[in-house]
Amino acid sequence: QVQLAESGGGLVQAGDSLRLSCTASGRTFIIYPMGWFRQAPGKEREFVAAISWNGGDTHYADFVKGRFTISRDNAKNTVYLQMNKLKPEDTAVYYCAASRTLGSGYYTTGGNYDYWGQGTQVTVSS
Image (cartoon, rainbow, N blue to C red; front, side, top):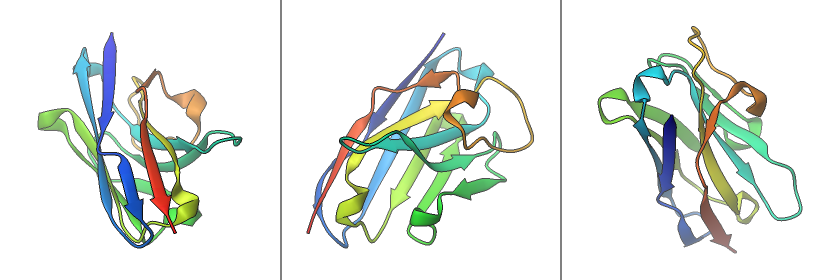
């Protein structure tokens, strides 16, 4: 199987930056599109960003466009989420996800992903 481990979360002030990392282990050769989701207390999980298997295509939720950047390094089996200009409403547990379905693009729906990490907490104070 595949294991995903997120890191890089923490407590920051509004306007600060954080970079989340998600490293895959196990049968990593079957990982293709990857994505980041988040879940705030009392809210449902929501899509944040996604990236195609080769990094050529990316997609973002409207609320992070211009502030967050997703990237990947397949040699390191790692996907990143660079988060700039953080806002208090970005406070959530951030999860990375990986799909074993080879496609030319990316997925924005959680149901398209087969593997999930345990999440990393991001807290943004005002």
